[in-house]
Amino acid sequence: MGYAVQAALPPLMTADFFEGHAYGGIFGALMIFVGVGGALGAWFAGFLYDQTGSSVPVFIITIICAFFSCLNIWWAAPRKIRIVPGKRFKYI
Image (cartoon, rainbow, N blue to C red; front, side, top):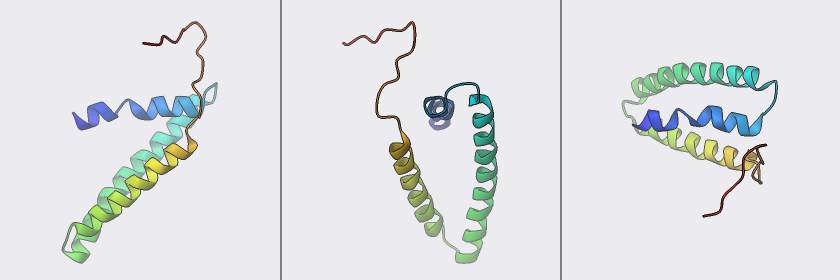
């Protein structure tokens, strides 16, 4: 459930930040870096565990990276709702 809920976020967030003809290339490059980061992150976590004998440093680094990731997304987020042609926003 955790990954299935999160899997739709990267394309949506990328579309909010970079719309237009270049979206496909930008999203493709982003996903390449996500894949490389995922592979190297798992290797680095195992290496750090082997060196220290504990998972605590890995969790601390993960929490710090997650915090800065959320901070960067909030900082770069658009500050107004983009109007999509043909759609009307309904207030509840």
